[in-house]
Image (cartoon, rainbow, N blue to C red):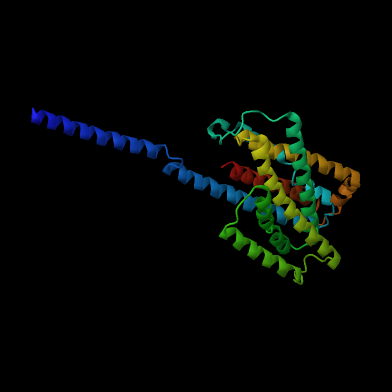
Length: 306
């Protein structure tokens, strides 16, 4: 009888060990970041980062090429950065059900009036930022322009602190210090590149406009996050896409109004005919600038969602 009880006890201990091992395996398999997904996640992040770096760099260089060869329309330079947003629409049909939904704070849908106000406000802010960026690109060398644009990180941290309650970390503070020093040095820089012959007054205008655009860009990101938290209260794939496409639609319409109300559209045909590189180059620069900015936005959408 004692041997039978000892054998039963051994069987129970063995079953308990197997149950614990099974539970441990189940917990590992249900961890939020499995090993296979971890590898794919980093690969996606790298791809999206390449899209952002490649798209923004190419679009900036093409924009500078447009102004250097006879392009003068700031409204047109702004429009090509926005008008290509329909290229993002197919994202709605790329297996949206495979993308998980983040925690839903509230199931109640915001009213149409509230959504419209959000889209219009952000769209007008985007239009203003893009126009200021175009002014800065017209009057500044590419190197100076790119360094000033990097100050958007500092503005993003500033607005995130007050609007989104973002805490400052050692990495953020280090970035702010470096960007502040570089911006101060640019103020005292004597432009010796020779490729952008503008007066000191126009140089100052370009500098100020680029700073304001960077500030507006940082403000826009913080307001977008605030809208997700306070208005939309969910971050599904379709909602993220809506927050990209609808403001782009509003900003495109606003820039078109500016293009026609300013009268610059009347000179576009003459501008194309007098373009130093020829008509074909003129059109190709505008087309590839549009595509490059959309490559940038694809990377941006990917990073926002993932």
